[in-house]
Image (tube, rainbow, N blue to C red; front, side, top):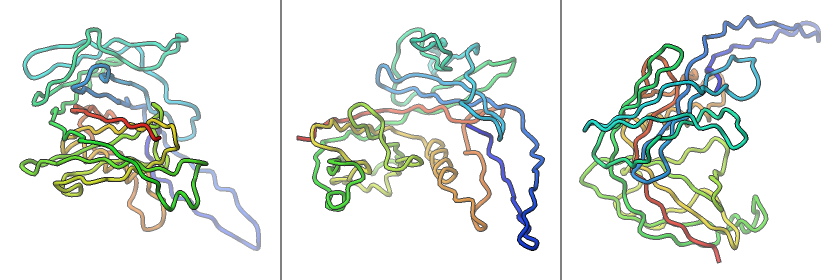
Length: 276
């Protein structure tokens, strides 16, 4: 991820001649980028650490492989996360728990990272999530007329009952045959309970499936802070940079010391269905 910069470009046209303007962009210092989560399901706990790069730099953000990463909960449990290189020995920046554990609904989780002599912290509460009652599917008439991908004309509908005695926020992920799938590359699917309503009665998926595909819907609980982070990120990703657009800025986060990204504690449930 690159630092978000606001660049004003001006072009001057004289007698059909074009003058090249060289911009003197002051590069900010690299910042730690954190992507991490704790859930109530085994195998979903991880922290990923990278460094931001300059505006003109190319390639992936460099992985941070020598950090100290610890997650603690509000009852005193401490879990150390260790760097996990890829199968080919590459430095991935992924840290996995040295001892397997699952998060507990109602507890708070604090992430502490020590990297390059700097300490970064974040805290999030693990809220309950609404169970998905069932999934069904149907042909989407618009996709049948002009499908984006041949045969992918089915949308999945999910059903749930959202409790109205508390304020809830959710992140939704859709998988096609174990691959995380979005309709547009910049899409993030999140909502609050006011948008969803009490009865989630056949909410259609934003992505489409073909016969034989396995569709999986995952629903994550979010805190208000998490909801704000994804809302900011969605706005940033979909900003057209036009004259009347808001100046781009980094998403609000729960991370300290200038780090970018988010540390998320979530309850998670899912359902799968095969398109037959």
